[in-house]
Image (cartoon, rainbow, N blue to C red; front, side, top):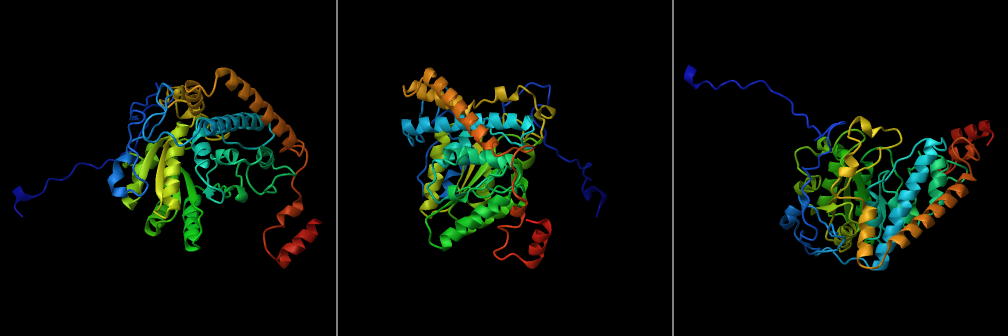
Length: 416
């Protein structure tokens, strides 16, 4: 090869590491979050060809505008009575959170995880399901239980691991399990519930059943291989499942850009698998319910799965083991442009004349009394360091249909 024809040598390679918009001490900045006007995003037919709605993976479906009005094609899926019930559920979850966080600080339990700012996602979604449907949740969807009528005392018993703990002390606090309430056992292993949800949905279809499944995952966990495996099976077999991604902007200490990669949005991850993929305002109770109902109907009519990204914000710490001030500005939650889900729904109900500030204050007091009463009842059964605890015998029971000889010997040695 002649000298003049030799290709020029490239420069040195460099690695791209995504950076958050702001660090602790800086000024909060959400200018990168493009927020469309409420009611401006179209509502396609349930049996739409996913290829024709690719744009919905890059927008945000919203119903409530800044004046508290419900506008656009996604409005109207709930009555005023259902909206008031939804407001109560979110307020109940928030009050429950506050009491259990305080209990952890008092040493009554070892661990807790808040839902502050994300109440609308799970509470509204639950009301779009039917009895028998199954959720495969993460540790931040307790609203599925609250909105589903699961006893709050039982949740507290599980958190305290006392002698009335329905899980017999076998799970970490807040890792609930309630099969009869459509709530699969929470796992601390990230993303496992996604493939389980798809498998459960496939089994339902194989049996010609009528029940659908919902898988839940956080934005950080979408970097796990189970996320992609679930999408492969869901799309290939058209499983009757709703695949939910809760984008609350932060993993335990890593901002969403690390897991999102170059796709632009988490919903866009579904496009490569041929899935209808939508983004919704996760702090808008009405929008969450409308999109969940759309996806549930699609699954129930045997059309196939849907991927939904809920754009929200984790106001509190990742858990009681986390200090968010180490990786984000303290004022960032106040700057979040989509507001507070409780306040937004309250303002809507006040605007349409179904609610008032007085009634809201009264409900706050009633809910506070309800949660305190439940806590007192649960604490009568014991807490982490005082009162009753699960029996040692429970370690041996309910594990095998027939207890193997070596466990029988161990139980006898333990004297239980």
